[in-house]
Image (cartoon, rainbow, N blue to C red; front, side):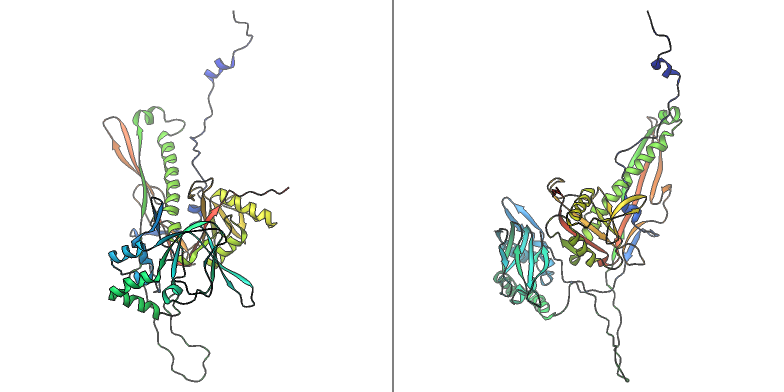
Length: 460
């Protein structure tokens, strides 16, 4: 016996119309990098960056690997030292095997200022400070060095006093090479001797500096003016299109019978396009060859002084990209850690609106969050990086690259091509996104490395 006096809601729902949303996707992010990049339409599929000729004197990093409990230098990476660039593989292997592993503790002096060092030190893991005596006798912090960096190549090669003192600020591990091991290799190879002599003769040439243009200024009368020309790189870098691809499959029964009020093919394509764009942003940042984090020039890398991202660290980044800096880019947790450090110092960052969202800024430069910025060693206790960019082709900055036109294009640089229906009644669509990013001049990009985000403060 039913004692209800009205129609039950569950029964009434069978006659009601449901208001539906389009399919939602948690993995969609604002993708600020893709929105901030100025995009260049590439007509031929290849983008060539022509530059003025520069002095190439090597990187400031030596890669290492772990062999059991021991750390070793990768032999081929010794070619980053300018006079070893053309060395034979066997000689490089011999030199790499001559590195000895040492451990150091916080506060330990790794290189004594003013003393001639017989060892070239490569930091495998840890952080150290280069300090010198200022003009008026004060202690001056020159640089913080971290994983992969070595010191002091010039003083060690020339057997001259080290111009600064290096003190460890964390425990760590280093590899050291005696000058005698280099001398043994050089004495056996005339080409290496010639390369070393050329390096020793190149006084005053800075790594990455451009070949000078001879000019005259401030003169009076009618002196002979210098004649000059601006030389170009012989082999400029060329950027080819990267891509992200997938095949979207939709059964004809679904697209025929269940296509209203929401178009099933369009909904599937929309979510797939979002996934491709998310992958595109990740590749632009982290690709091993073309990624922005992998294309930071040697002199544009800064080590976090205390681990946590501080206003001093971001100021140091701004000294590297001081010509019209556009955006910082960091993981959301990193931006939160920077906010904590600002709060602790009593200098809260200004909030500005960009891309329709409130964004933290520092010195007027917005901090763009991106979850594609990776952590080394895990997000909880590992380290990450902060990127600073100058944008635009006119500003000789960073630009995004995409094809000028693609067949079956549904968005700029993203195509959806119908591949037909198979014998199972499934329609397949090839979805492809073509893209890349180019750094026009080295000083358009800088990175803060070894940033820790797990430090919190008690404000009570």
